[in-house]
Length: 240
Picture 1 (cartoon, rainbow, N blue to C red):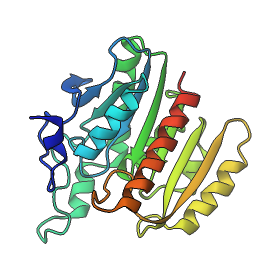
Picture 2: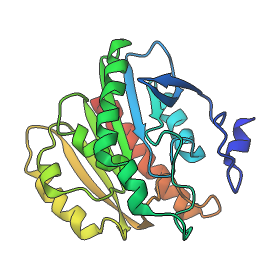
Picture 3: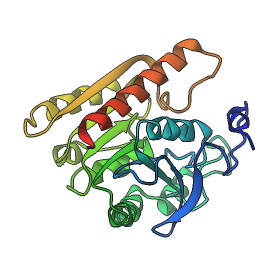
């Protein structure tokens, strides 16, 4: 399949989408892209729609083009959310099987595997569910930098526990994580002077805008690209 076919509407979620390859890492399938001899890695933790999402892989390729080895693990073991509006889909049952706590435990051997391959610095970006996993990782010193995009349900205590340079990119119109909560998090993060952090609220966008935008909406594309540039610039600054 050509790369262009990966971005059809509706998209074809073939595992051959993107410029990279699918391989096994720490017991998980993962989309891997970028220079294999790089000593700098970035992990992207997908939202509930999974590691095969074409626009997420497109972002992975974009980050890889800056010199990072980028890994997008399948933390859902081939069971992403396909249609949340399906009356037979149970969000509670899915989250019981795929909890952020389990994602956190699964992420640790991925990080260890990258370090065993010679990675000297690792950054992680998490989208929604992925942000719920990432905030736990950011409370350790196993990684060097974090970017949380349109967060899922994360707590003030988790934010207070963050130990590494962290950026939070949120939506003005977010039914899952309202802008008012982001403002609270900005206050908490700004009090942490031992490392750099920031919280940015994107106007006029909704939850998921950075990787689930409408290809026919120029404004949506522009907002997504701005968030992606912020993500990349954060890693260029802090993962080195």
